[in-house]
Amino acid sequence: MLVSAAEMLKKAKAGHYAVGQFNINNLEWTKAILLTAQELNSPVILGVSEGAGKYMTGYKTVVGMVNGMMEELNITVPVALHLDHGSYDHCYKCLEAGFSSIMFDGSHYPIEENVAKTKELVAAAHAKGVSIEAEVGSIGGEEDGVVGMGECADPNECKAVADLGVDFLAAGIGNIHGKYPENWKGLSFETLDAIQQLTGDLPLVLHGGTGIPADMIKKAISLGVAKINVNTECQLAFAAATREYIEAGKDQQGKGYDPRKLLAPGFEAIKATVKEKMELFGSVNKA
Ligand code: 13P
Image (cartoon, rainbow, N blue to C red; front, side, top):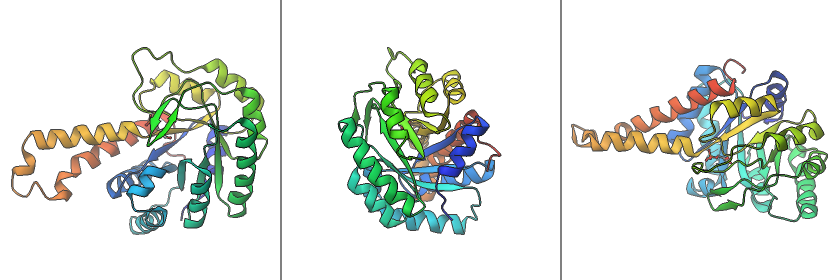
């Protein structure tokens, strides 16, 4: 059964580790992430962007697929199904469809409007036992059409949003979706520390997990990050493994074109990426 992400992240923050949010795109992604979490006895959050939800034909399909897969694969570790960077309308759609967690990304609104909409959605989510993430400051780069300038969050605004009763908070600290540019200045630990001083026990979320060096990940966890989002890295691993299979001509040998064979190396590559991240984040055996 899907669970809210509130408890698992409270536990993570208190235990000084982070739970990975891995974004899903299709059946292979979902199966690879669920099986890896189960094998490593780790809690996990499946992230669904609005674009990926649409690609998978809609949120009801996603909920049906994940619930069915958890039952058929005997997944017993805590799993949350979470809307990633949701707009106001899509938060309601996911609450209706049976998601166990949502993110309202109101970071592009003036802070007063972000606060008002977040407050309303906190009540709607909690009425259904669903956890909710909010965002202050913006994550740089582009993810599925959501574009951010990457400005660092104002710690006082973070406090204002934290006080609304959100379960966890994404704050821009110089992180970027997608690959980091050569001249990236790194995470602003000064900002992160100032935010955690004001938000106390609230679990903080680090978006743009792809390509952040291990030492920065560890430092971010030590400063209150309890959820780390990874998307691009699984896509790159899947693409590289699939390319290698095709370039080696394996799709032309025997029935190598069978999608169950063609997609297998990419599937294994996602599993390896998720395993590496769960080990780095410290969530292994924390289910
Ligand atoms: P990356 O694609 O950079 O890993 O970011 C994922 C993310 O933050 C999802 O919201």
